[in-house]
Structure formats: structure tokens, C-alpha cells
Image (cartoon, rainbow, N blue to C red; front, side, top):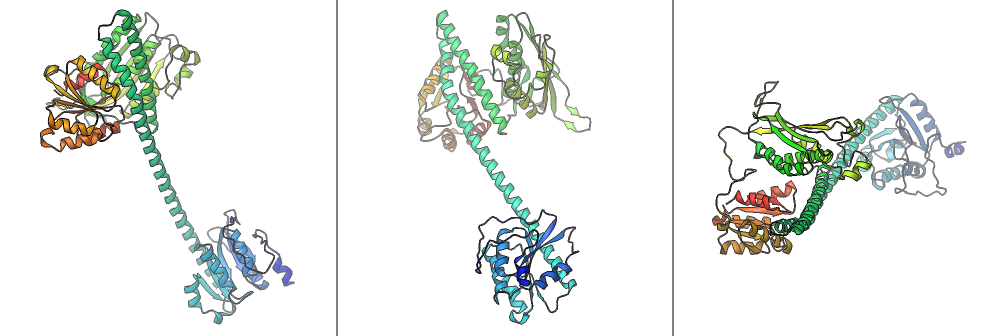
Length: 577
């Protein structure tokens, strides 16, 4: 009778596939769960069937923290090890010591603690021969959680021992889960940081590799346009330059979108003249608007201070995106307007908190084709155009408005649209800029849209540090056109020697070069007292903010990104001589 009972397994047991009498350790097999989380699994290991029956009777109404027990049965150490090897959620083992051998129970303990390296399972020894295994040595030597003598055990004592074991099991599980969650979060954070760094490095390299050849195309096109070409030649070069500028716009949009996705879009905070910026934009579009028979005008609130702190480059980018769209979607005879007003003044806000910022609202209005309501709802999503026909007729990447929206938000504002099909559109965006305290003066390094030269260009000697032959030719042609004298060297090491031997007024420093890069070359130049005030201007094909910061940290005074156009180079150089 006992034999049949010993060979039968209760509901929920993990069945053994062993057929011989040997113990088989299988720690590498996948261990299954024996419960659905609504109960605790307790494995009763004893070779006497009455012990199993009595244990089941005593614990039939047992609950801990609202969970019942799922009792599993094993009648030998071999069977117990087989169950444990395949069941990974056993909370407590009620374990006899003497079964098929005098140390059978200890073999189970050894399997749990040393083979599986499982210190979570709680083990309670129940023995009918306590003299064969003294309590103290068993607990210390075998990592046993409790030790009960069958002769002295009572239902209350068994229940209390089980409660203590389950409480310990619960606490260990919670601690293990917290540690596992923390390690997982740390690992995910490290992976995210590594991915972000890799993406940033990729963007920097892409920016450099793309802008370097574009610098040759656009720079030399600028030079050729001012070299006395005939009308037909000028038209051809103008087409090359305009095509290159369009390609550069697309490249910039893609790089900007990638920076936004990577969370790497940063803003500058420099002093600039807002009224001059609006005036420059008016001048920029005046010729184009006349060519397309459009009326274009600008208006700015006279109460807005001329000079503020913000990011003029990104503000200009937003305005150009919106005005380009308006011009593109407005037919001949139409109108495009830009207006700027102040929504708040320096003083106290509604909560009585002092504000040193202005909330500026910009409106770009046109009388163009308008935008349907269903398109308006998704207009600021990436790669969105009005429809397929619009894409074919007007072109564009569909990234400009998405980028503009992100830039507005980075500047503390937002952007919206009001439009009706056939009646034009009005894009409205607001940003925050810092107010300049009275008495502040523009100093070197501040942004100024229309800088005035202090000296004649021909009295200025410029050192050009550039490793790319095409870019050397572009820099030489632009400097000649502007009337500057110049010397060209191939890398930072040659720049150090040239600075020490010559008397240069300015240095145009490329950043990525062999032998010695521009950052390290600048640091070494600054270490010599004679050159602490020498203006060094970074001329880099990388337009990422992190590269600008590296230039500043190295000791460079200014930054001009490739491709370099004639007017940008002129303005930058004039700030420093």
C-alpha cells in the first residue's frame, strides 16, 4: 500500500523521469513554476507516507498573507532533487534527514545550496533521529533555517516555523527583485548612454564629411560669382550655387532632425540685435519677392528692445522655414507678411515673480493656397507634406515645420497655425528671450548682425590651418576676395611653429586634422603668454553644439561652420580685427 502511495504524485507535482535508484543532478534544465502566484509551494520530503498525510491535515487551512499552500510530495532524496531541479518557485522544503540513506536529507540540502546556488528556498529539517544530527552543527554547516524533532513537533510549532520561513522567503524574494530591477535599470541606462554617444559621434562625423565637400562647392561658387563672368556664365554658376544651397538645407534638416531625436539639440544664448535680424530677413527676401511678383513686408513692435539674449541662428532658422513655405505656397500677386510683437514686459508676472525675459510673438501670414484642417492636425509631424501632389509640385523634406516646432519649444514657447483652404495661412509662434540690463555694452564675442570693421582688411595677416586641399583653395579665394593677406599650413603642429615665427592678426583653425588637431593646437598656443589674446576662429565642418563647446573650452574665440560663404566670413573676421 505504501509503495503505491509512494509512486503516486499529487496535483501540481513536477513529475520525475528517473527510473533507476541513483541521484541525478540536472541544474541546467529549465525549472518550471508550480503555482500561478496565488499560493506558496511547499515541498514535503519524507519516506513515511503517514508524515505526508499528517502534514497535509495540519496545514489544510493554512494561509500566509492571503495565500494558501500548494503541497508537493517527494518520498526520497532522489525524487526531491528531481522535483527541485524542474520547479523554480518552491518556497519551503520540509525535509527528513534519514531516508534511503542516513545522509539523504543533507544531499538535498547540498543540491539546493551548492549545485543550484539557491539561497532563497527556506529549508526546515524534520527528523525522527535527532541524536544522529545535532541541531547546532546541522544549522551552521548546512545552512538550514529551522530544525524540528518529530517527537516534539506540534501543529502550532510546525505552523509558526512555516510562517517564519515564508516571511524570510518573501523578504529575500523582494530584495532579489529590487536588486535585479536596479541592475536592469543601470544596464539599460548604460546602454542608452552608449547608444546616445554613438549617435552623437555619428552625427558629428556625418556633419563633417558632408559639409567638407559642400564647402568647396559653395565657397568657390561664391568666388566665381564675383570674378567678372559674362551673363551666361553667371547664370550657370548661380544655378550651381542655388542647387548647392538647396542641398545644404536638406542636409541641415536631416542633421537637425537626427539631433532632436537623439536629444542633442542645444541652443546658444548670446547677445544679438533683434531689429537688425528682422531687417536682414526683409532684405534677404525683398529681391525674391519682387522676382515672384509678391508683396513682402515686415513689422516689429517699437517697444521691443533692440538687443536681447537668445539664439539668433535658430530664430533665423525658424523664420526662414516659415517664410520660405509662405513664399512657396503663395501664387504671383499674393502677399507675405512678418510681424513681431511683445506679449510681456520685464517686471512682475501674475504670481509676483520677477521676470527678466520677454515673451515675443512672431506671425508669418500669407495669401496662399491654404491648408486643409485634416492636414493641419498632422502638419508638425516629421516627413508630412500637404499631399502627394504637393510633394511633387513644391518639394521639400517635410522636416522644416517639425524642426521649427522643436526649436520653439526649446526656446520656451510653441507654434500654431490658422488656415483655410484658398484663403492663405498664418503661422504664429512665441519664444522667450532675456532682457539686457541697462549699461551693458556689446563686447568681443557677442553676436552682432552688422559688425563694422575697425581696420582695413589689407593690413591684416590671417593664418589658415586646414588639412583639406579643396578647403585650402576655398579659404584662399575667399580671403583674397575680401582683401586679406594669408598663410596656409596643413595641421596644428605646423600652426604652432607658424604662430611662433610670424606675426599673425587672426587664426582660422580647422578642428579635425591629422598630426595635431585644432583643439589641442589652440590649447598649446594659449599656454604661451604672448598669444593669450590672439583671436582664433574655429572653421569646422561640424555644426553640432557640442563641437562649439569644445572649441570654446579649448580657448577659441569664435566659430564659423562650413560651408563658409563670403558674407559670413567677412562678418566673423571683422569682429576680431
